[in-house]
Image 1 (tube, rainbow over the protein chains, first blue to last red):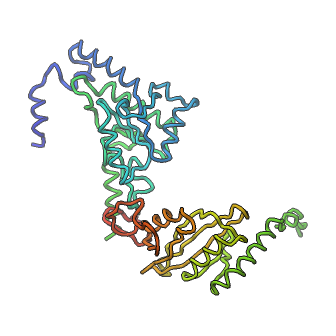
Image 2 (tube, helix red, strand yellow):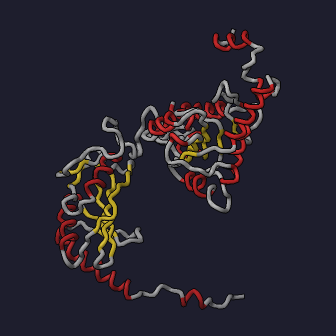
Image 3 (cartoon, rainbow over the protein chains, first blue to last red):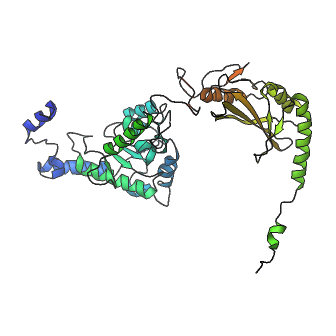
Length: 214
Length: 178
């Protein structure tokens, strides 16, 4: 009943040699699984981030995380690209306002597949300190582009960003297949209580605010 | 038991330095000149800066004097901004002037009504005021007479309302639930 036509079509075709889930379950054809594993390993260890920062998170994520003490190069993500054509990781570091939103969408559209998005900091998750009484702040990067990993903090420490980066690497390693690049598991956020999703939290915040106006 | 008098507090009492004396002389001279232009001029005591309140009608004359008189030489407008006081039905416009030649700073404060806020433009005196007044117009809706190009600077041209006023509300903005 609740299954969309596309999903039911996929389920009728299975078991297929190109089954989406066979790669990460390590049960599919031996050749394709190994190639998937190899490609995913290579992709996950050479994430090239786009240099994109809109506020204070950029100092933490672009500069502190990349500098010698914390050293982003340990995880293969130090090759910051100033052009979206050459980048495959978009780190949304900072507040997104109404005027910036179309530019962010353009940058995301200009990146080549496979592309990944990490939203760092309170502003990119929900609007953060600007969720209420703001005429311009977009409430979360997910309103503009699909987000893979959320990193909480205001701003997050470099260690927290690394945790988010390693989470993304893990998702790439066991989530994707060559046949279906870009199809991944649902967005994750570290340290969210079990049974509670980001949508629940957001709905609660917005509902509370709507009640206050009436 | 009585505690012995603390010598350190007495010795650290503020002593007037030559710079303070110079500032006091400068302020006296300034007030003398301003009273001739605006009888309602007042020194604001609640500010750490040298700060005077003047009336709306005398603004342009006072600013022209401060810019052009060689005793004051306020050659730089550092910023121009506004405080919104909805309970008192007024908006307080602030101009921070700097004199690079005399090494003095002066804060000018002018109150305008919230219903029809209008001020003379000072962009003829300091060119930077042109953009600063556009920003104030954009956020607070103060209109400036004789401004060469008064239109919105940050927000979209078709934006309705002035978002930094305390009572601003639109359908996008959420109110705090507490």
